Amino acid sequence: MDNYALFLLDETGFIECNQKAEELFGAVREELIGRTPSDYSPQRQPDGRISRDKAREKIRAAMDGAPQLFEWKHLKADGTCIDTEISLNRIGDGDRRIVMAIVRDISDLKKAEESRLESEQMFRSIVENSHSGIFTVDEAFTITYANDMVSLLLGLPNDRIVGRDFREFLDEESANLVVDNYLRRQRGESLPARYEFNIVTASGDRRRVEISSNMIRDTAGRLKTVGQVLDVTDRHRAEDALRRAQEDLESRVIIRTRELQHANVRLEAEISRREQIEQALRRKELKYRHLVDSGNAIILELDTAGRIIFFNHFAERFFGYTESEVIGKSVVGTIVPARDSADADLEAMIRDIIHRPEDYRLNENENMKKNGDRVWVVWTNQPVYDEAGNLKEILCLGIDRTEQKKIEDTLAVQTRLQAAMEERARLARDLHDAVSQTLFSASIIAEVLPRIWDRSPDEGFRRLEEVRQLTRGALAEMRTLLFELRPAALAEAELPQLLTQLGESVTGRARLPVNVSITGGCELPAEVKIALYRIAQEALNNVVKHSGATLAEVSLCCQGSGIALSVADNGNGFDAAAEPQGRLGLSIMKERAASVNAGITIDSSPGKGTEVTVNWPMNNPDDPFGDPRKNN
Image 1 (tube, rainbow, N blue to C red):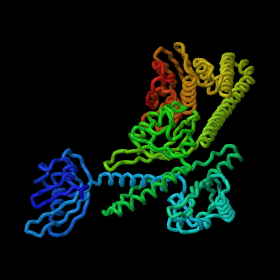
Image 2 (image 1 turned 135 degrees about the horizontal axis):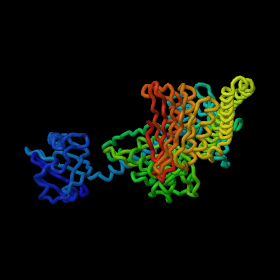
Image 3 (image 1 turned 180 degrees about the horizontal axis):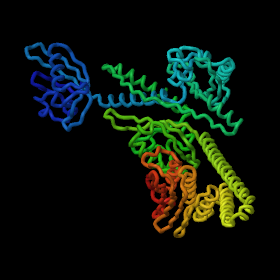
């Protein structure tokens, strides 16, 4: 009893205590005598009850002859909270009812229990929410455990998987392969850590899976196999399609993890029971740690400052760091570069993940190996909170998709090139048709021109001028055609030259007079020049197709503060406020303006023509496209 705090209590409070009681509460005997247990307790106990009421109830029960054994939160004299185990027993048979209280400090034991529970929950959560199907089989191939991903893969609930022979879910060839590999491993032969075989789902479908397995012995010495399977059926299909057509993208398989589940386990009061639970927790912790370390996925944990606090073996092999090299270091600068290859700010992204982890349950970003190689990883991030709801750490599971990313980038480039070629071909066809039509009209007029001249020289002169305009327009159309077929020439030409040629082309093709005026000198980035040219081209096409105009004007004003381009006509006009979104190519022009951060306005009303104005500022030397502007 010398190691326990002892108190004697009556209805008034403490009437005696030993030296251990003084040490436990950090108070001398004189300070304790006459006080009540609730004086050295928080206002409420963990179950929510008021300490004063609960203490009176326990003491009253003990005084009535019912021994009490329970856990209690106490406060030391300095306010420190401690966990205790208290035994209350009535002593003496006289009229005065006295209770002896035996108090034992169990704070360290409680902390150890909570730590082991937390560790078990973490490793269980990793296994249950893994991207891979994880299972265990005994020496008879009977499945003794399967996580949710195995159920999803086989299309069966867990209770229809556990207890069955693993070979039942394989085709004949795969079953023979698995048995053969198992026997060879037992003989001590060295085999690859991973291999593939076929499984048969509940619906009868055959799925190709990759397995990584290890043999372990449980606490009873029985041999078990821990396996992780990853469905690679779609990957194989995509690879086959890519080899045949060199265009298909390997199927991207991302398995979303579910919310991590936390279960609170209440320990029984007896010391012997607590020891049994501690031993069980140790065994389970070792089991789950082995599963995590032998997994084929990157698993790491970050603290609230973005430092790495856990780094599994697969992560070591993948990134080239040992655990000791990265533990305690920031993830930025080790496996995450401050900025990626596209100059995106990854350091800011990591800060955002720490502050708003719920917004990054799933994200993909560029990472960096120890040797400097850049790789792409898909991350599933799970925040872990303490009892008060404060973020403790973030659990991150990653899968390498560098090769898939390279294929996607290659296909994206091919798609853009194909689209550009098709657009140039379309424009070339349109211009070719326009040139052919213009030259045909000119040839018809030229054939009858001598007879017209004989009848009326004035009419003949007018027709001759018309032939001149047609041929001049055809020449402009041909130059435009050459620009469309040679994009480099379009980028090298000056904008005033392009607009003048565009006006002549429209005049010759549509017989619509187009006046082009240029003010000032314009030295523009190629992207801005091409965007302004395309907007003018689209605006004049709209004039020809929809306006019914007899005159169009194109003006370009180049000043130190910026560029102003205007395309106006005297046609029918329209109600700009009521015009449906996207009609008359308006959305196309707005998109082109937005691509170079230019502002665009479209002014029109019925019967008063239309004017399209584009303004591009040149007052931001850090941005080749100027300040961002909102499109009206």
